[in-house]
Amino acid sequence: MKYNENIAACIAEVAEVAGYLWQKGWAERNGGNISYNITPFVDDMLAGCGLLYGPVALPRPFENLSENYFLVTGTGRRMRYVASSPMDNMSIIRILDGGRAYGIVAEKAIVPTSELPSHLSVHSYLAGRGDGYMAVIHTHPIELVAMTHHREFLEKDVLSRLLWSMIPETRAFCPKGVGIVPYRLPGSLALADATIACLDQYDVVLWEKHGALAVGENVVEAFDMIDTLSKSAQIYISGCAMGFIPEGMSDAQMQELKQAFNL
Ligand SMILES: [Zn+2]
Image (cartoon, rainbow, N blue to C red):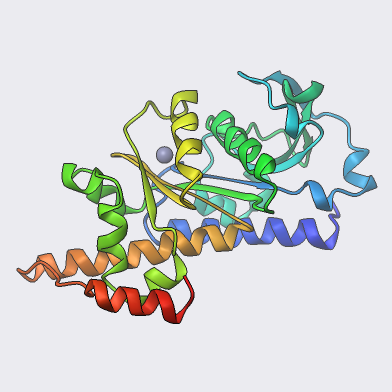
């Protein structure tokens, strides 16, 4: 199918990031999922596409997403294959029936991730916020997930403080830090709701003993934030592996950074 320049760029961006998730070891088997709100780029060609699949009822209505379009990775699909053959492993869906259902409009009838209700819940929240955030990524970054197995790190902002203090860039590029969502059943609306509550304050949240979810204006931005936090986690763990707890930057050094970069 011949997509316009903007949609083709969104597809290429999802493929690029899917490749990174696989290379990083964060996307075992079919782990993780990506969705991208491409509504601003929909043209007559896409709007004229009939349904290849559906309508499928959604577990809750998403009124403010009615007639929105999303690129969504497919259920059971592997990120490494999203990278190499994107439109064989994801599809474009349209939200129908006033937000109560979805249908696949392109390019093949690749059924979306089982996490679709969570992704749409987050997109609905982001659309309500209206600040141009269009991308949602969920993945399994090894070191960050490992850190959520330590009770002390689950206290509010303990992990943000620790990760910021490992390297100045993390404070600069993830100024909101990282939120913690207590364990909830994967794919559940309870997990989606707890995530949304956390996104009021953070762009990246860690799901206890499961993974990370990041939102951003685009897929690369969302990926970069998880990647930056992951780098800090690796530095911390490297110190521990060498037999010491890394000292971390001091509060004064972090305050200086905050002022210098207007964070
Ligand atoms: Zn997961």
